[in-house]
Length: 167
Image (cartoon, rainbow, N blue to C red; front, top):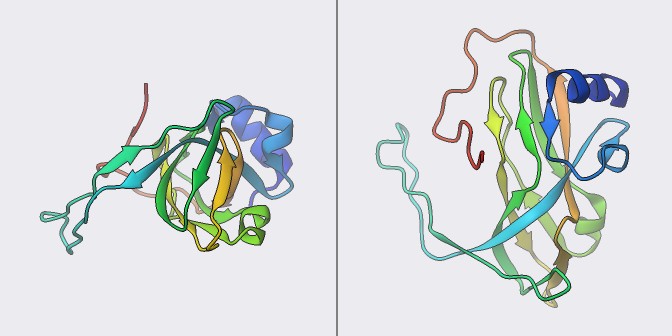
């Protein structure tokens, strides 16, 4: 696992993470906090198969925060989009874990692996289990990305999400 010193070097020299709000706040002893750019509500079903030839990504509808930037979420499942753009070297992978404050409020972020070679502004699933809901403010830190050296891979990520949400 990469520590804060190694991550700071990769962030400043390689641009491992960009578009963050405050490096000193988001850089943790063993990871980097991802912050909330936006939330979307699911608008239909999806489909997953082995080859991805019949894959269907569920439609979503962006939610609008209130005037103070708060999202008032009912119990349910949502898509969260992060502020940060990640650019993975060919010898580093990452996984994300829900920040403990979110867990303590009855919610969690479901994530996948950030593969070596992936570059983009990622999204994850947010599940609000709390029957009384959850309030999330724009830019809230919701997940911690934890990075690992993998050894250089023969080919980096080359899927449909490469360079997603890059402006």
